[in-house]
Image 1 (cartoon, one colour):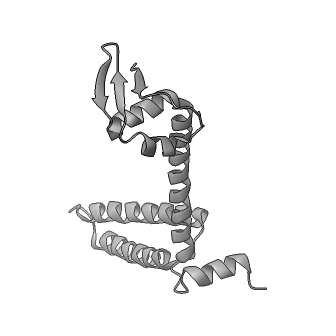
Image 2 (spheres, rainbow, N blue to C red):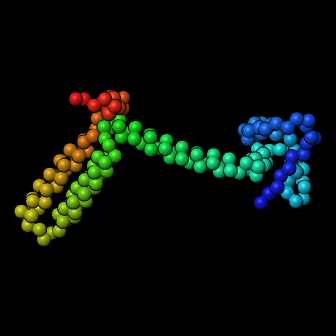
Image 3 (cartoon, rainbow, N blue to C red):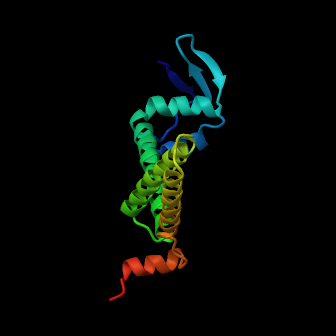
Length: 162
């Protein structure tokens, strides 16, 4: 752990100040650092260390708020993206699950077609099933592709048509 002290002449009036104004006020100050009591000119890192030692709870709360804020911003932007595409979170998950299932089945049928022991009827049956799967994939990919855009979709969510 570090220990910092400000070396300055005493003032006649003591006033409370915020952490942000402390940084500004202390730019031209000199600090006494550590057990060796070495005097160093102020720098951004020295000021931050001083304020962290002095206001550690404030810095912890500020970092926690920043993390929570960025997380909420990410979720907000992600849901705006979903709204602009005309999807809900549930529809998006179901769409991706359905696509994954169909693509897995299509790939397994393509692997079966490589077997040379298949009869012509089995090959045609597999090819027909692959074509059906391709049509399903195309239909599912089109689902939720709203051409209306973000603002009209938001309007529809806020004021649904009767």
